[in-house]
Length: 293
Image 1: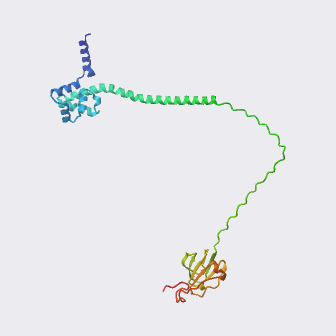
Image 2: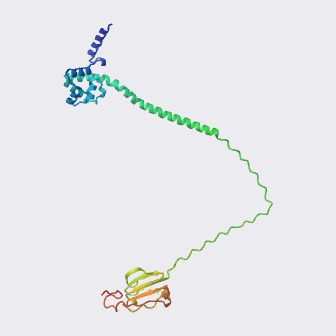
Image 3: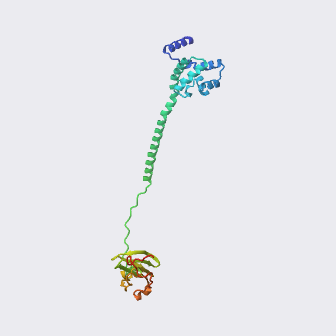
């Protein structure tokens, strides 16, 4: 069979099946021939159609895998065909046949590569596991072989009994703990109880411990100090006082203001105080509360 007859047979089969072999298509060449016959450059077509030059070049070279894909490819082919005077419907049909034939062939390497990746990863993991198991077993074997047998310990001979007289063991005496220093006790302690309503103000060691308070009948207070206690009483007869658990003498008459200065040095007098009258006996109001004039 001659080559011409073989060509006619292939052409009839292609027309019957409505599929053209890939090598017998001239879609890209038709685009380029039509463009050059009109004297139009790719730059002019790109400006008029707003299709990038690299996509126009891909159509002329039938490198459809360089196109963005999807409906954009058919739109680019149709627009390019209309611009250079080619039947756009036929151009889109021819592109569809070429794309169906070429896309699987072009995509097969990528698919093979995607399938190879999991296989390679699995093989690598398997090699790592085998290497780990082998090295671990070899390490255990080497350690077992190199470990020397433990020597059998012989019982030590007992030393002969001593011939000398036994030494006296001295009992160590435990030192007695030093007694803790006694807790510091305040040199002064006063306790007061109100027989009548009275007002007091107390300063201990120069610090105000009671800036001023009205005591009702039956109320008690206690204050301590190291050096001195200054006590101001608004109703001297309305208050009983104990100094270091000793009852003091009467402090004064009802409604009289007294200032007591108590120190360790004047305790021998039982109470030692300097009396300062701040005001005459109260007139009206509640006894024992200083009246502001």
